[in-house]
Length: 79
Image (cartoon, rainbow, N blue to C red; front, side):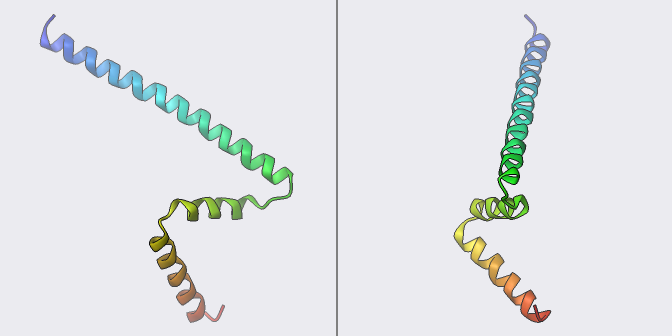
């Protein structure tokens, strides 16, 4: 088997892996959407839930910094 064939086969395998992972990602995205819809049907505010999820992903120091900056901006605007 030539090097070109090996490289083409390897490239095809990489592409197929990415395609499978993209499909899984779509499925997970749909599952997440379903959870938010279920929470909304139970009376929860999904916008706030998304904000909480976003905050929980952040490291504490980054979250503290973002909250301090938000407080500074709010104070500057008299909120």
